[in-house]
Image 1 (cartoon, one colour):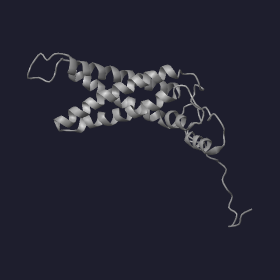
Image 2 (cartoon, one colour; image 1 turned 45 degrees about the vertical axis):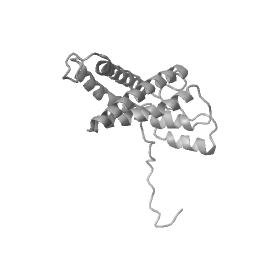
Image 3 (cartoon, helix red, strand yellow; image 1 turned 120 degrees about the vertical axis):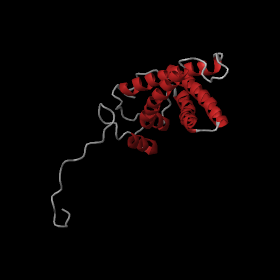
Image 4 (cartoon, helix red, strand yellow; image 1 turned 30 degrees about the horizontal axis):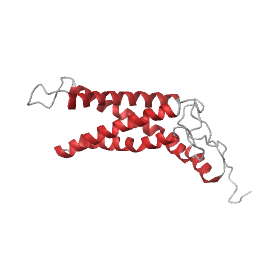
Length: 193
């Protein structure tokens, strides 16, 4: 994972967890001051807006690391520290993303409440597993530019799959296509030399 990917992932995870946690505290744990209002705190709508604004950055960061860090590491034969917590964090992350979007588009109050509870539970579980993954697998195992080659045996189906997964990870910026050959073929009149 490149430094940009790491910073984006960690910052967006902290921002989404903080705004989501504060919103849950305001909505479910603060006493209602007005019996006719669903807002328990004056900042509650603003915190929800902040959560809705920062959550796409977390979704983007997870999508950005999916190809190399999640799928690529999952396909490697060599055991790694933190693999179990990383694999376990993928399922609640997917549930968190799906339920977050469904919470915004459902109109039935019962379904919306169920999606909200599922979103809060999957988000909390994801953050716990993400923190466990950070503790179990400390950074610094790979080159800082994120362009390390697949480790382990180069042959076999896994080695080929890893090589295909990392075709776009050639340069220091991380997301690049391999350079094309600039040599033009000379016309041969239909014959091969």
